Image: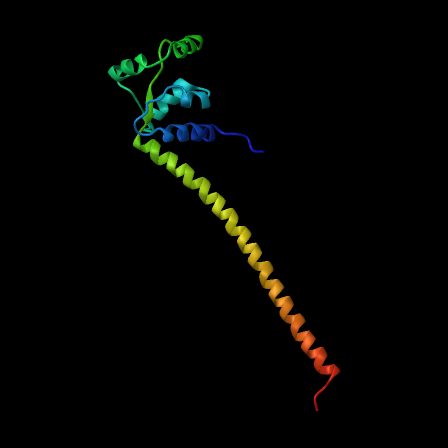
Length: 145
């Protein structure tokens, strides 16, 4: 099996974010898939794939966190979560990744169909030759004069 690349891991995170688009804000989704989470988030923000919540919005979203989630954040060494959501470029990228996967599957089945068509042509030609041979054999056994 092929080694998983960072881009494949990012794809998984983007697809999770896409499920909640546009109204949900997330924290920890992309970080769970990428190793260098903080620098990766900055790059994704700079490229316009995700956008961070404003400070005011972050405070409101922090109020909705459960005490268990805060404990988990503190165990990871973070004071508070970084809230973000997919930006328009992120939606485009996620949809492109889905379309790429579907196109690869379609190409696979197109190749299989092409191979199957070749075999059907060969079978048809073979059956035609057998049929002509049968007619010739019957004619030579009982010639009509």
